[in-house]
Image 1 (cartoon, rainbow, N blue to C red):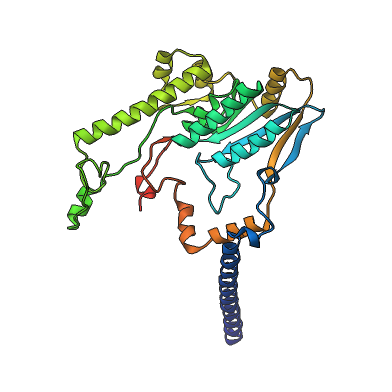
Image 2: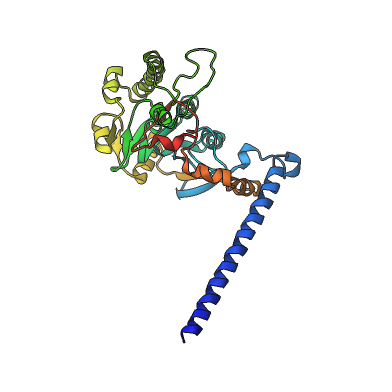
Amino acid sequence: MDSQQAQREGRGVGFWAAASVAIFFFLCTFFLVAMMIGSLTAWKSLVAGAEAPEDKYIEEVVSGSGDNKIAILPIRGIIRTEPTALLPDDTATVESVQERLKHVKKDDKVKAVLLLIDSPGGGITASDVMYNDILKYRKDLGKKVVVLMGDVAASGGYYIAAAADKIIAHPTTVTGSIGVILPLINISDLIHRYGIKDDSITSGPLKDIGSPTRPMTPEEKEILEGIIHDMYERFVSVVAAGRNMPIEKVKTLADGRIYTAQQALEDGLVDKLGYLSDAIEQAKELAGLDEALVITYEKKWSLSDLFKIAQGITPPSVRRLFEWPEMDTPRLMYLWLPGFTQGIITR
């Protein structure tokens, strides 16, 4: 009996071993073919023509009725300039916001925009570009913009929200973190312990400012703090303008701390607490509408998009799944980094 059971177990192990090998070779073949075909898509002549921006997204109805529309534009995740291969429709990119705004501007029936922001922030420039695009839409077209904050709308996420006519936070939202961060680490003691030396040759004493292999000098710290101060002042001025708040009051709130939704309401950083239905009603009220069709723009997936995703799941890119987007190089950030391990972003 024991021998029969052992034989059955042996056959089971053999089956799963063979299946694992087959799956491995199938995946290898798939990725190889995907990379070959994906690389060909770089040549427009081999693809079914370059897609025009207006063809990348399709309009989908969320709720409501009527001729007039309220367009929902989501901004979720780390704010950055471009999408990654694994997230080609990442909504927290400048490209995504600009493409969706193009649709909004072309449709005269869209009377208001509802931004759904769920982001801890991100790149300074990306945050500023999104803010400027939304503010320009409001002023040039005279349309209304309402923000509904999700779990987090901090730092760069709040920076963008300051462009809106009204800001609504979920009762459980965390917001604030008004400030700037330049993530840097120093491993000089560690490398000296192992006898490692940095023999970098520079054209001047400040060329390697922020180097992790040696202690920062007082002069270098002063220079970096000056840059951060300038970016901080810009953040403060954006909040002051958007919230119609004196600069000095903003500075009392802008020490980098985060706020609950209720605290933000009491301090004037948001206008009210509510949910999606409340934000829609607020947008209708500002636009002077009794009823409206609530719409959103979803990406229209193409064959080339699928090949790009497949290309992204290659070994060099798998490592990037564990990295913060756009943080593999030193940069100033409008970003809330709770419990952040600096080593994650260095290579």
